[in-house]
Structures are given as structure tokens and as C-alpha cells.
Image (tube, rainbow, N blue to C red; front, top):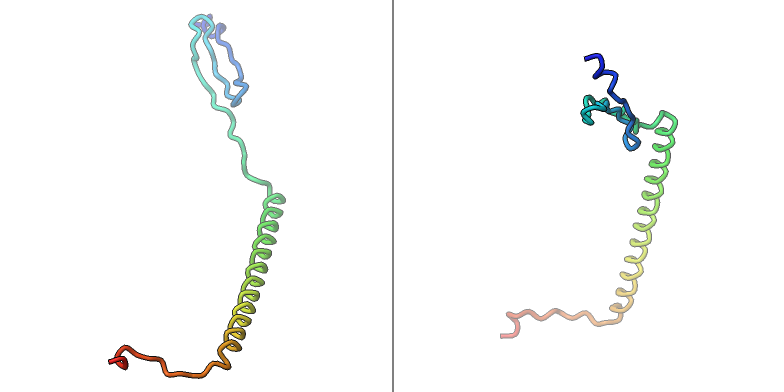
Length: 102
């Protein structure tokens, strides 16, 4: 049994960083140690900077949206005034109803 332990090879996987133990005589994996977990979390400074960027982006989108609403209301006002001017000189007539046609 002690010789079998001497025949074990411990290697590191170049892709993921795991450590499999391989028996040289059997050419099979005996044990496997998973790679250490990768930390995807940001440190506090990076997280604060990311929050500031998102806040600035939200503010810019809100300002753009409010400007669009102002422009839209001005456009509607101009259209209403143009339609009012167009129909200002037209005589007011009573609309005909279907019942009046009989």
C-alpha cells in the first residue's frame, strides 16, 4: 500500500486550477480537489464607483425623458394653435345627424 501512495501524481489543471491525483500504475484519477472559488465580488471602492455611475446614468435618462415631455407638450400646443387658426374663420354649422336625413 505504501508503494501505491508513492506512485500517485498530483498535478494542477491549467484550465480551472483543480488538483487531481493520478495513480501512475493504473493511469486513473484517484482523488480530485476542486479549484478554489473565484471571487467575482467587487471591493467596496469599486462597488461605490459602480453605484455612482449607475446613479449618473439614471439621472441623465430622467433629464432626457423630461426634456422629451416638454418638447412633446410644446409640439401639441403648436398643433392645437395651428388647427384653431385654420378653423377660426370657418362658419359654425350644426352637424347633420342620421335622424335628420329622413
